[in-house]
Image (cartoon, rainbow, N blue to C red; front, top):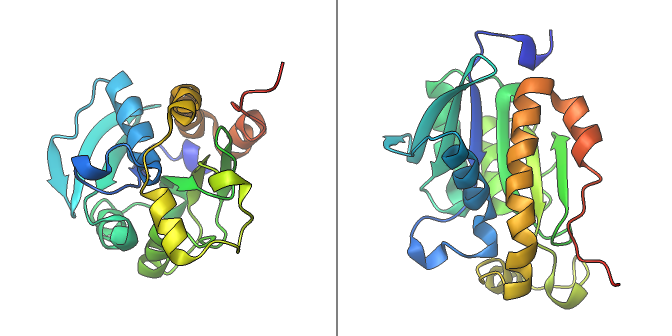
Length: 210
């Protein structure tokens, strides 16, 4: 039976980022930004603290849905997510992670089930703690500086870039991306993975030349 038909299953949506105002506008915090926007539209607030995360709870498509922002810092996201999965007895296929992705241009969104971490330390931490890759990822593109190719950036360069704030141009793009991620989440919860992938994986908010 598809996961969205299991009426008693709890779903867990996690936005990844780093806690604190210092990091609030960083590219690495787009997961927090997207989840904040989605929760706000549902009139939910992150008023609870569970398993080292700020947590909100709501009902979507007649199912309990937990929203969480880990406060462990990105590289240790699995500490929080693993605890939440166990506490709320969340099945792997009912776990959705929103995170930044340098391998996608800014303005692109990709949804997929499973796969490696792609070098993302937060995802890697989650995989290590769960012992399983089979959860849904909503990957939000942040691109690379000056079109740098994968594998040609040192670790320090990567850290500087992802912990940098969005530029004014990038913020304009993200104003369209962030609400679209909310639509992706609604679709995942109501219509399922395949329909959502077919609908949104071709979305591109990059500005095209006139």
